[in-house]
Image: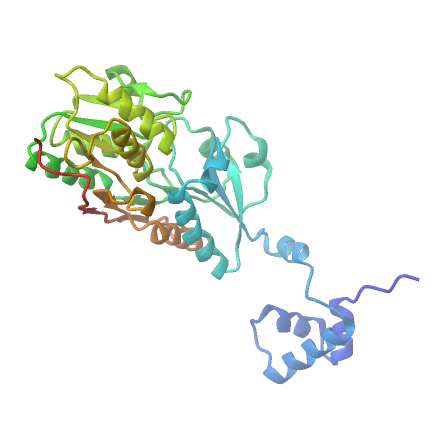
Length: 348
């Protein structure tokens, strides 16, 4: 005969207390003496009872204990992207300390998991775009939302970067070194079909990914670039492809400096220069964004913009906790800083 599964009621009976008192021993809250709690937990150990059914607790509280983390249309990239890895580390640690789990969700043009999964809140780590289908689904489900890197969404919390000002500092630095032919290598600009190639005015007008558009705007506050290349993804391969295309431009457009919107893209530019027998920082200056640890680029050290990735992730988590506690949506912009390396130098 199968052994009867112990219940909270049987634990209470063994400990000589009411069911409500036994429940307090497991919740860690409410008026219960340490002696009584110890007696309840000892009775539970004797009976092999491991605590209240979490699904029952979820039903009673109306919460799942899960936060959805919307990663975009290709979530697999998050595990190979050092920027995403550090950000998720800060986010998951912050939520985990509060007893919350995470569910990684691809943002898709449809309901799918985003429309059916149980979650108490959602974090859109890479921001939202115009007519964002993921945001529309979450809004329809009345799920609290935290947005990473904007834009501002009514009723949602926001954790952003002062990246437009940082890119202005990058451009000012390059101009001070005598560079007037500056090209840019951008992150993907829009969701309408991931693409790569030179960007014209029409494509720029469609740009609505905040990380890219802020950095585009910051550079243009100082100087108009001679060319813009849009990377399909933030990868070394995309950076290398874009660099070769920019360096193949005619002399009147050929850049003496390339501004990459991520360190990974900038690393691809460094490799492309080496393949051509050019010296980063001497023949062509290069800047990145993120301040990642890239020891394999030695002896080159990127001039880059440092952003606090783990802190950003932790702040996304804190914004979630604030919303779940009934707080008003918050808006925070993290400062970023230009860090000089060996990949920028005076125009020859």
